[in-house]
Figure: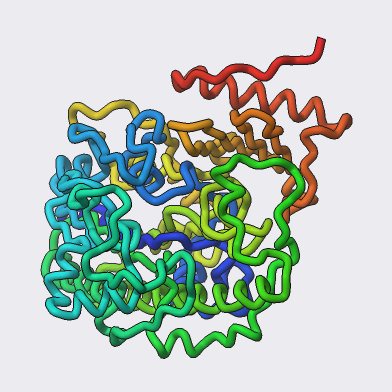
Length: 478
């Protein structure tokens, strides 16, 4: 009797995709047919949380199964230490072909254990002279957008790409940069084609493959046919789009959208949302091309397909844009998984998951051990939840941010979200998401919530103590 073929894994990731911008998560405006179909064929997670709401630390937490305070890449300019083991090392040690195709944002020249790596450098090879068009037309002038694709190539930390004219507005300050590339030349289209090529060439052996898109991360310049799907004037605005009166750390409050709370600000936000949705829909179409190819090649039955992102996008909620915080738009992330015969079709789960949980889950489902010289993983496997969506899962999801300067922390458990700030004068936050899903009422200073607050504070402090993270306890009233 022939041995059963090992489980393949296809991990599709995007950048800056809020769960609020997906049809299968309740958005009736954005068009995401491919990911909606994937959710209908598998399971969607409603409580998946970001462990570090910025690109590099979040992505390396996903790749290592370690929180940033352990893997060490705590900013977008810090590389993962060379000897740190990633999911690629584990699967390569077990005999898998490993591939990363798309945005890794590696900071330096490491491959992080992948046999097959195509990042922005390969995309530039494909573009040839069109690289100038890409960099100018998309306004991409920092490594978060892929230009330059390695931070170490810069001579000065804040310099602009030499491809970008000095008079071109920076992409974070304008939505008026016109798209000049054809859809087929976009990075997402390139990633989809190259992932399909990998599946066609190497799908005959066990594989662990990542297809990593830049969109819907800025620049917000979708291909013309996807931009045309959304009329800015028709974009619904978030109800809560004025920054709450509670003091917030500088790292959050600086990300207000322009002219917040005015008619001019609302018009800007509608243009922003329309362009963002255009990016989402293009990314969704490219993800669909990969999933269709996987199914066409007869690989679906033995391939776990997972879709997620590195962090969310506030889209004007709480008066904010971008990420950098633990409000739901930034911190609650889409997570969809399909595996015929194992994951029940068309199911949802309330189980708590954070980004350190991916590596232990993949190892668990594939039945393989971590590679030698690996440090113990921080995350917990959610494989039992994939088999049974009613499984309880782990008791709490954890997040951290700004570890090198006034860090703050997320502790998400039961109906509660607790956020602990260390900046002077910034109070704790406590939300009951079962009754206040839009996080409009901070219960931390209300007398009848003090028992809950003390319990969550104690749980977070104990967790950090066990993790070896120093945190000064909040003084209790005498």
